[in-house]
Length: 358
Ligand SMILES: Cc1ncc(COP(=O)(O)O)c(C=O)c1O
Image 1 (tube, rainbow, N blue to C red):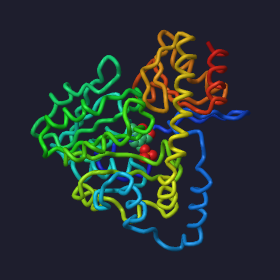
Image 2: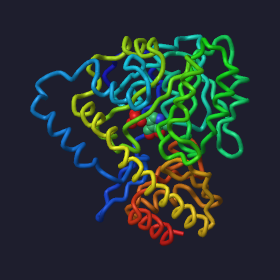
Image 3: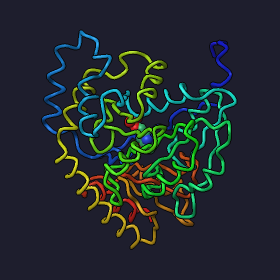
Image 4: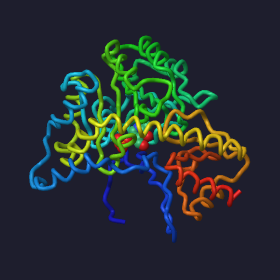
């Protein structure tokens, strides 16, 4: 121990739970972090290579090429597009820009594990609202928790870890009933995988709700989580607010170039969505044939109830067989596991390990 006196809030800030890693003799099948199983397409690798020789220069602080590509695709001016070092950076910056002691932040639970950080780091009060019986956001219950002190509402759609999704119309009605002074972040990290809506549907909400911020990422469908790039679509004042509270140059040059190239390849996005959906159906059927129920997934992962099976035994047993999934207990949800859809080979390795175990 160093004896250093740290900020008193530090003890309330959870450390992001890394996926378990295990020493294993054979090929490791990692289905724990909702990554895509495919590496970047050759054009994206080419764009990264093209940047290598100029790494002695700082990256573009305005991220203008990338912001323009995102804006063009979303039908929004550059001024309304913020880009971050992963969408997590934007989330944490939004916490700094919006929250302070005495303020409240409302979010559903269980949901993305970063949300409690926003309150913990700012000293604001977290107000978590239980999901409904289907594992979906209970928007009515969330609306009841909004008070004069609420500054921020977070909605995760599709929700991590339950993979469930709400119709855009429900979110529209929820937003209409809320006071305009509240910021609402609609976290759509998995929006492209949602078969119930077109990813463009929620863009329409921005026209009616100036206090809405859509949060999206290059980490999931675009497969660039190793580089870190995410974005927010909202008002210009939101973008300027988060730019005030974070370090300059937070999005590195390789990430900016790779993301700007990746967004041009929507055919690849469609191909990945199709492959993921095929694997979703395959795994859902196979899990159900083994008596394991999962929630209705609109994402690239399954949220599986283990019933009377011992969670630690299942998750650790899979790991000993070289298959890493996310334990429910790591997310505060005993008796569950979250399994990212991999390739058919990886998914079948998971099923074989499960059969061996059960
Ligand atoms: C719901 C949700 N939002 C945001 C993120 C963060 O993504 P990134 O910071 O990689 O953009 C994740 C990552 O798992 C997530 O599940």
